[in-house]
Amino acid sequence: MPDSTNADSPIADYCRDIEAYLCRKNDGHLIRVVGPSFELVSRWARDGVPLKVAFGGIDRYFERYYRKGPRRRPVRIDFCEADVLDVFDEWRRATGLTASAIDSDAASHAVRRGPSLPEHLERVLVKLTNARATGALGADADALIDEISSELDRARSVTGGIRGEARRAMSERLAAADRTLLTFARGHVSPADLEAMREDAAAMLGSVAAQMAPDARERAHERALDQLVRDRFHLPTIRFS
Image (cartoon, rainbow, N blue to C red; front, side):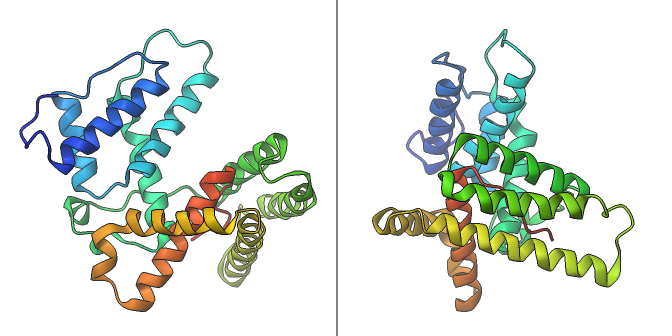
């Protein structure tokens, strides 16, 4: 893999990992991450996009690609850029990190606009429906998922003109539903797996955590852990900010 950095550098390792993951998603068809593609993926590494977050963006692109019908050609990593950046922004919001807190080129970029409240509720409902259909949390989660979905349906019916105190109250209800679902999901993770996920969360925050105040670092770590729990069970982030 030619590049302008040392072949054994962390950036080169990051690009190799992305290349290998893309190969698996392409059913073993190797699309090299070289030239402009290498520069693109290198920028993700410099901007502090965790590998698991980048993988999530690639997964999102492939999910949409599969919905279009049978694939005709392998996917290049360049096609996944918008989804990777979207998932990165979602991860930063979920962990409480801002662009200014990240020691990278990302600090100089404007934060990408997130979805509107109606769009957010629609995405959450789709993911909850999928989670229920696949039984990710087991049959004992069905009643909770149905209850939360009903609340989201009610919220979706009034989002058009909701403002001020009513909007704040809705945000609080969404945050409460998010905490309830996460607490339930954590209860389905073994202590050993949860400890391993804590280590993964710390690794994902990396050097950014060292620049944060202790209370902010702890909040970011817990939010990163929450995100890993969501990823394990394919759950949405319900809260909206």
